[in-house]
Image (cartoon, rainbow, N blue to C red; front, side, top):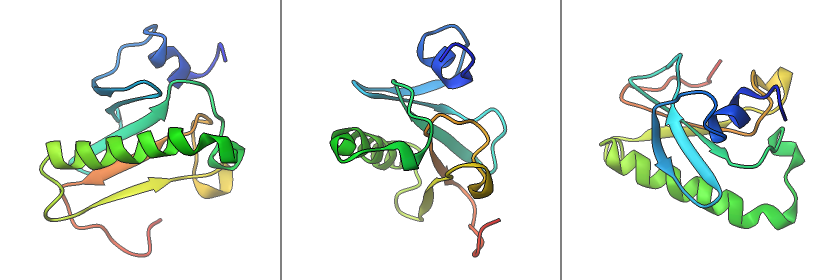
Length: 114
């Protein structure tokens, strides 16, 4: 995907504050944070949306959630709590169509969101 900003971050063509790098995923701080801690966890390969995952992507999802758990602990969020969320497609609030898991914390989260 030559026009995908997240693919360009994975390729090192665009700078990002990368806080985790794994076999299948990387994580970096969101440029427009919605909480004191706002990290995006993305697959290295282009997957447009959550709906595009297949049963064979279980290992990828495991790595994404494991990274979220570790980052929450590293950021001091584990004890008080945090939110991990996927947005899917336009009506779901997905702005960049490259699968990404938002890790948000450091403030009280409202419900319902959005």
